[in-house]
Each structure stands twice: as structure tokens, then as C-alpha cells.
Length: 93
Image 1 (cartoon, rainbow, N blue to C red):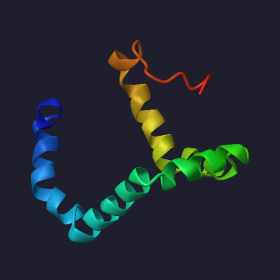
Image 2: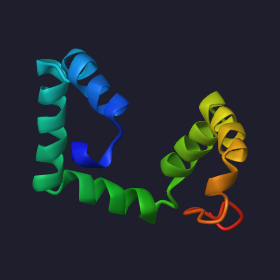
Image 3: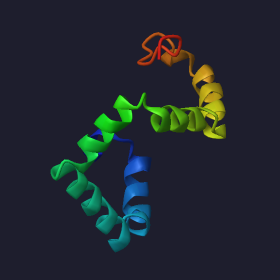
């Protein structure tokens, strides 16, 4: 996958990755995988949607109010070369 990222990001992976991906995070990822494989994730997602997705929408609202979203919008606004091929239409999503 490193062929698709910058050299800076690749270097960051090499020097920072081992500090982030620890035995504890690997254990947590295995737990998530188990939830996917045994159907727990799908069952919970179906139940969430049957209830009108209140937790999902609340989390989305909290994430959208995070400061990083405001900063990201300002930074993207400075990248005029990227304005034509936007992947997300925020007026619709």
C-alpha cells in the first residue's frame, strides 16, 4: 500500500507505526474482526437502523462538530486545485 502514499507518510509509518499498532491495538482489532465474523456487528447495525439510527446520527453530529472538521474545511478551501473533483457533496450528504 505504501506505493500510493507520499514518502513523508511512508516514513511516518515506519517511525510512528510501531508506537500506534501495539499488541493491545492488535487484540482490539481481532475482537472487532470476531464481531464481524460472528454476525454481532451486522446484527447491531440492523437493530440500530430499525430504531431509526439514533446512536449513529448522534455520533455523526458529534464528529461533524469536532474542531478538525472546521480546520479541514479551511485547509481544503485553500487547495484551489482540488475544487473541481470533489468526492463529497456536503449539500447532499
